[in-house]
Image (cartoon, rainbow, N blue to C red; front, side, top):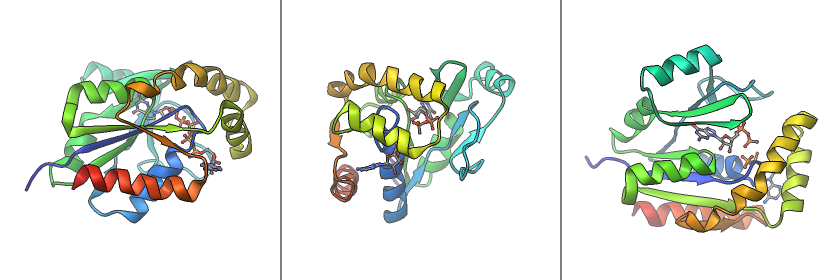
Length: 188
Ligand SMILES: Nc1nc2c(ncn2[C@@H]2O[C@H](COP(=O)(O)OP(=O)(O)O)[C@@H](O)[C@H]2O)c(=O)[nH]1
Ligand SMILES: Nc1ncnc2c1ncn2[C@@H]1O[C@H](COP(=O)(O)OP(=O)(O)O)[C@@H](O)[C@H]1O
C-alpha cells in the first residue's frame, strides 16, 4: 500500500479554514485530520481528541523535550500549538492522507520537510473587513483575543504567494466545491 500524502490548509484566523477542512473530512474518504496539541482553552462545542488535544503548558514543554513534534509554534501570546509526529505516522502508514489546519508558519515548515508529498492551500478571505466580521460573528474570542487575531492577519496575508494554491473563500458553497476539487486533483 502506498503511503498517504499531506494536505495543509492555512489562513489568518476567521478566513474559514476549519469550515472547509471539516467539509472535506465529512465528504471524502481516505483523508483524516491531524489533531494538534494546544495550550489554549477549549471552546464550547469542541472536543478533546477530536478538534485538539488540550494540554497544559508543562505537558507541551515535555513533548518538546521528548522531540514529539514535527513542528510547533507560539501562534498567539502564551498559546502554543504543535503537530505531533505520531499523528502524521498514524494516519499515513495505512495509506490514508492527512489534512492539517495550522498557521502559516507551521504550514510552510511542513512543506519544507515533506516537499512534493505535501500540498499547501492558503484560504483567502475576500477582504480584511470581511475577515473581521466573520471573527466577530463566530463569537468565540474575548476582546483581547480578537485583537490579537486581527492584528496578525495582515502579516499572514502577505505569505499567500508562498503557498501552492490560493483558495478564495467568498461564497461558501463555491469554496467548498473548490476544496474538494483541489484535494481530489492532488490525490489522484
Ligand atoms: N503551527 C501550528 N499552528 C496550528 C496548529 N494547530 C492549529 N494551529 C493554528 O493556530 C491558529 C489558532 O487556532 P485556533 O485557536 O483554533 O483559532 P482560530 O484560527 O481562530 O479558529 C490557527 O491559525 C490554527 O490553524 C499546529 O499544530 N501548528
Ligand atoms: N464563505 C463564508 N461566508 C460566510 N461565513 C463564513 C464563510 N466561511 C466561513 N464562515 C464563517 O466564518 C467564521 C470563521 O470560520 P472558521 O472556519 O472558524 O475560520 P478559521 O478556522 O480560519 O479561523 C465561522 O463562523 C464560519 O461559519
